[in-house]
Length: 255
Image (cartoon, rainbow, N blue to C red; front, side):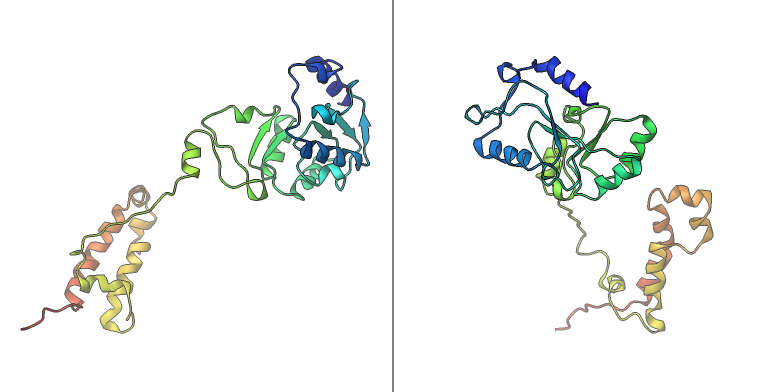
């Protein structure tokens, strides 16, 4: 893998990326020094990738590969946000998955593997997004959400998802003042005990879970459950009983 990575860098930027008009720079001196501190403290082996050296005056940091890195290395403590690639080795896929799960959920997960192995990694890990056998192209789509999970971020953006993230989905429910009558509406509050109040529990039970087998288990019942039609069927008799048995909570004042 390492020789192929070195070859890929040379193919894109040559042996001196500093001279390439396509190679970028670190955003500022603070981040340049942050990368240098992490690289200086690593216990891994730095691989010669280019002929260039880091240059603070130009904020230039060459593509850097570090082999033999351990999970507790300085390069593995925080997100790098720089052209440093630490390489950790593993013996089994379970070992690699355990390493991923032992850390904060990443913003993006990139898996290079055959279908079965890739599916195993994706199904057993969490990340803001995941891409198989490629990198960065998950950002190219304007219809799929991009965002973190847990410590890697909250919310998601691109396209409609950006609007949803910065919008509040407000739930508004409206009911007329005249319906239901105060007596029927008393089903929502106590008292629930006593024979005169048994209609409350009977009616509320039917609204949540019908007792009739034909509505609960039959094919017809399962079909109509796709819409709350069965609730209307089973509650009509109950409401009629409620109207008869309930006592008005509000009475007209006699002048």
